[in-house]
Structures are given as C-alpha cells and as structure tokens.
Image 1 (cartoon, helix red, strand yellow):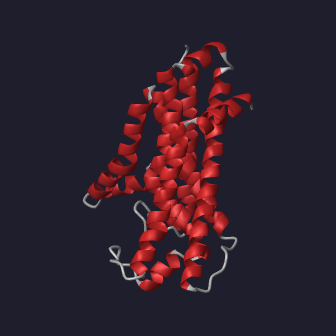
Image 2: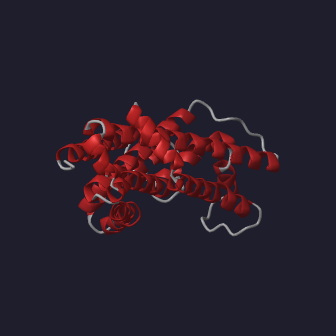
Image 3: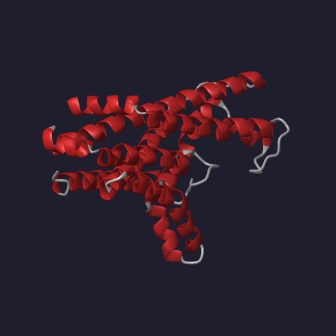
Amino acid sequence: MGSVRAELLRLWKWPATWVLIGVWLVMTLTFGYVFNYLALNGGTNTRSMSQQQLISAMQPENVGAAVVRGLPMFGGAIVLVLAALAVGSGYGWGTWKTTLTAGPRRVSAMAGTLGALGIVVVLLVALTFVVNLGAAVTVASLEGWDWSLPGLGVFEALGASLLIAAMWTGFGVFLGVVTKGPALAVGLGLMWAIVTENLLRGVGTLLGPVESLTEVLPGGSAGNLAGAVGGSGAPGVLTNLSGTTAALFLVGYVVFFVGAATLLKVRRDLV
C-alpha cells in the first residue's frame, strides 16, 4: 500500500496525467455531443446519421454506450500513453534504478505502479461517465426531450469500459518495461492502436485468415466488446464476436501484459 500511495502521489502531481485526462474528456464531449448537436441543428451530418439516431446517441439513458464507444481506439490510445509514460519515464529519470536498489522488493514496486494506474483508470472511467451524463442531460433539457436516467444496463457498459481500459493500460505498462523508455513505448503503442490494426483489417478484406486474426487482437477484442454492449457508431467498434468471447480475450491480454511486464522487471532489471 505504501508503494501504491507513492505512485498515486506521483501521478497526481504529474502534469501529463491531467493533460491526457483533459484531452480525453474534450474528445469524448466533442465527438459524442458537440458534433452531433450541431448536426441535429442544421449542421452537416458527415456520418449520415438520421435525426433519430442523433437524438438517441445524446439521450441520457444511452450514456453507457457513449462512454464505451470511444475506448477501443482513441480513448484506449490515451490510456496506453499514460501507462507507457508512467512506467517508461522511470528509466529515463533513474527512479526505477533508485527504487530497485534501495526501495521495496521489485514485485512490490511493480505492484504499486500497477495499483496506482488501476485506480487512475477507474477514476477516469467514472469521470467520463459523469461528464457524459452531464452533457446528455444538458442537451436533453435544452431541446425539451423526454428523458430518463440510465438503467441498470449502464453497469454492463461501465464494466466493459473498465476491462477495455485495463487491457490498454497493461499494454502500455508492457511496452514501457520492454523498451525501458517513454518515447519508444508511446510511439509503438500509438502505431499499434491507431495504425497497425486498421491496416491489418484492410488487408483482411482480401485475406480471410488475416481478417479472422484481427478480430482477436487487442484492439479487435476491445472493439467487439464495445459493440456487444451497444457502443456502435464509432471507429474501432466491431460486432463480429460475442461479448463473452471478447471479454475472455481481453482478460487474457491483461494477464499476459501484466505478467510479462512484472517478470521482466523482476528478472531483467537487476539494478
């Protein structure tokens, strides 16, 4: 717990944490509500959504879907960057060397970082829900719609959001440990999350086996879970796997990324 508190204090005082959280909140509000509201009120609807679809996307009862639909690609990339920076920066600053030499046991130090990142991710998803709910209620009130608060189904969407964010966090931690630095970890993570999997999906339209593979890759599994809980209409969201199958793949990725990163930290980083 001492390691967790120390890492939480570091992340709390670290400007990069708040910058990334702010960027994500601005993105989810802009793409989820601002653009849809402008399209509904006479703007250009570039996504070819009907008026009813635009209204439904901004209804308060559909906030759970609004939260989860952005995480498979853009939100996940931001979480990955945060995790990669949090772990990889310790190598450049020399704090990992100090910690592993004179601090707690290596497993405890790694667990502290993972625990702190887990708390940040939970708070990020909760904050995203609150901000989206506030925006949805504001829009519904301005337009005079009949609206209601989200039902119990919102917990399914929030659970899926947490699992998707946990997978991208584990991926970022893994890259930070493997590369032993923040810059390369962030670059590789962004290239994979935003570019590589999308290119593979494009190739998959020509090669069946490649298309099947993309469904179970990290981004594909996250997209399928988001699609299974209703988060349609956003880049990276898919509907080719059941929610249970996608969730199992995501749990497997979390275990692999966290386990591999911890093993490397214990066995490789001796000083």
